Length: 167
Image (tube, rainbow, N blue to C red):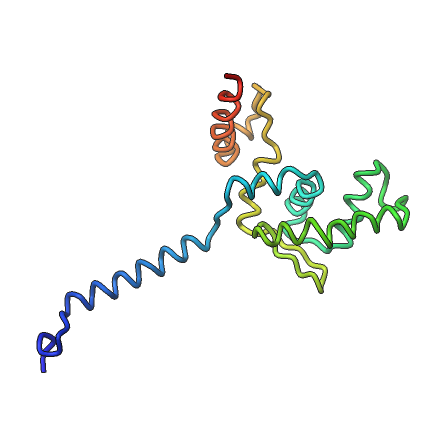
């Protein structure tokens, strides 16, 4: 029995296979990195979340919750880590553990191992890094900024928003 006797067309089968492959490729592309504008602004509007991203960037994308909390508490209190009180540490630790890190994990910018106290920056999180250093009011650019494609992209995108607000 040939393909036409079975009521199937070999061309249809190969097209279905191609469509399936195409769907898998699209799914992989969608799994890569996708953040909405609201998600980006939600993450970046809070100083502790921005400082978390900066800390992760400085530490090769990984951190322990206790180390992050100490660093942020010292920075917020403008003192050395050794001078922090347990109350200062605890306040930041609890805020990170209960609010900020779960929110960042839900959006997909970090992977937060709540039980292990580990934090890892994701590809989506890396996309946010140029936004941390963007200054829409600065006309000066260092040679690094000139060569930085992500920063240039951010500057180009945001300059349209800033210009339209003046109308």
